[in-house]
Image (cartoon, rainbow, N blue to C red):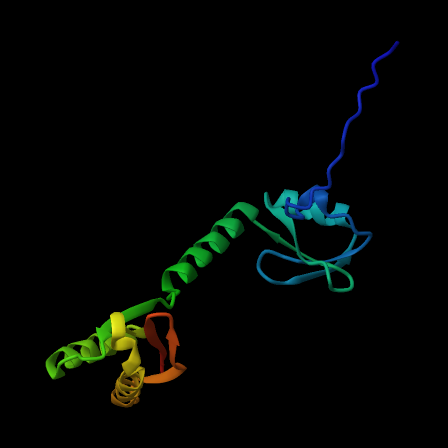
Length: 180
């Protein structure tokens, strides 16, 4: 009995549409210097690209007819990756920094927490102000809420309240975001 070998053909979706992979009856071609060469058959455009020792790259398949450009694909790909790396470097992720305290905090300690929060907000991070309760201290949640509101008032030129003071178990917390 003969063995039938089955070859699976997967579409080249992950591969870029360059050179022979461009499958359109007619395409609009742009030269390497930006000049339009007009509408032609991909085979003719490929010959022009080969003469210049460059690649034919599909730029826009949504246009009618699709737009292709003659360029050095390796250099083009490298430039795109370089731009992506630069954009990633300049990107700032917003972190949530926490400032913890107790509701019976002294004035100087409170000032230290305010200065910490100011520093975090100036760096562009959000601040989560948390007041912890122990034992029967939870009865004084109204004092803690007043303290958090006072903190929001002291930081109002730098921050806006994103989440009002609320109790979560044995803690009361408030979230502040830097003003735009």
